[in-house]
Image 1 (cartoon, rainbow, N blue to C red):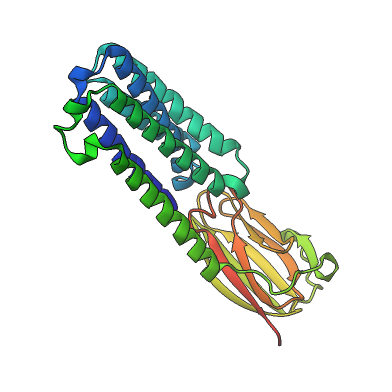
Image 2 (image 1 turned 135 degrees about the horizontal axis):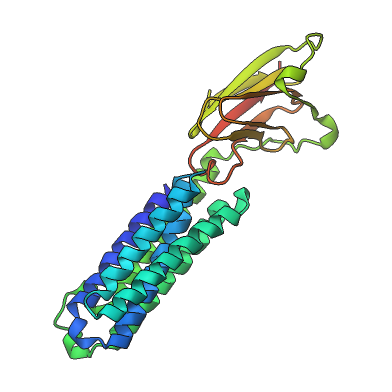
Length: 300
């Protein structure tokens, strides 16, 4: 949801800045137009590169190509009303920004991917707003007053950015308060009994109390809600029916299973503390795409 809001915000800001450049193109010098095209192309390309990596997890080639094309196209749109030099500047800057955004997210550890998207979104929104202020400084006040409030008053863009960022922050806090799944008591290391075994290594003599199969595909776990009993010895199997690799990690424990596409992996596990545990896929962008489930561990 957050990435959709950020993507929509960048789309609005792009149209906003481009409309300003088109409206006041006769009052902007070639140098100012080149700077505006460069800043807008690179900033939006950078932002889209980070967002697309989460929207298309595991598809880095597609993410890079799309962000390059969109960033370059926006640079061309911003520079076209000014000059051919501004078009070239915007095109190359958009291409560079798209590549940099995707590379940043590819190198980013999975637990920090969501945080980095928020940081980059705030940073890029701030840069676009500063560009809007810079363009305003190039236009005479009496000329600005002849146009609509959206183009003549920087406060309008500031309010739009603040509204979206505030809504995103508040909705995130509300989501955490209502859905955060944590164990009521910390689980000490010595109370976890976990034996990592591949499917063909499980001995028939190992008796288990229950068997649990979690199916993984793009981008969900089935079942999404699981109930087990405290201390029960469970054979946990991750069945990857998807087209890309997935893993399964139970937050708050060291239970972690990885499975290649079309493969299965198993572990024999036992959780000794009652509570709610979150199941996540730790590969970059998968959790953010909704690949989560919950386990409710109850007393017998």
